Length: 344
Image 1 (cartoon, one colour):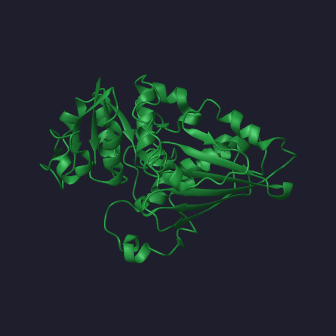
Image 2 (spheres, one colour):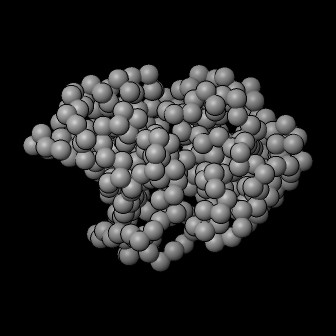
Image 3 (cartoon, one colour):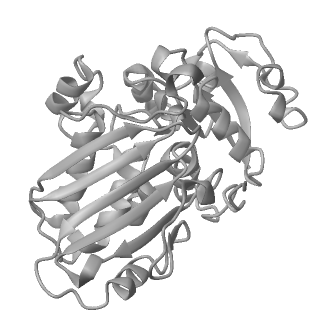
């Protein structure tokens, strides 16, 4: 049994971590921080967790207390982990960061997209990008893991088999993606209000989104050379979910695309390649740490279309973070993550 802490426990990814860890046989949550809710019982703020964390209350961040944990999750806005991660690592605590603080290897590019200097450049070389489907062995040995973003998870998993095999033109890739409103976080924002988001859909960040450099970095690694990516996110009137429709141009006759995808993910417990002709739905992954994929080749032409769906709060955030924890501490990869999706 290990002890973990959660920094920033009142947001959607924080409560999702609590929900998943409540079923984890090897983990006890020892500390959860929130300056605004310090002193409040977790079960008071989140009644769904009554009976699981009745003795746990939010507290102000305390580096000494967090350092007594075996691992600490940061479920915080960007920039927060910069200040504390190094101190925790120095004390022997492993860090799993759900924010964007350590996802980009280039600190100047991070500063460009996030509007502030990077506060822990000395840790960037050590940070391991926490997409288990490509970095499983590095994650096992890591002290600091950067959990991928939700859009980057859905897009990379859908395109990896094609780019790794050199099957598509890496210079002309399109990612047309839709997200539920929880992707914007729990803070009150007018565009996320029910009256604003319901019965409507809109694109945003079409000329540049913060997840673009992260996706491009991962796809470049997969292709072995720079990629050309058009990425357009959309806000849809649903609570959870990411749906990514991905387009690539085939460079040669690809053979059996279905078998190629099935073989690439045959040993991946959280990637489900659906039968040929399938159209995965976001509701089929709600609450589950799984990415469902389907591959299509319309009219047997030169365009391949991949459909990729995840729950943005689970496989796109907290579930992936727990998967990383399991790898880092040698637990069963499915521990705390084996529940099926919720339907309807």
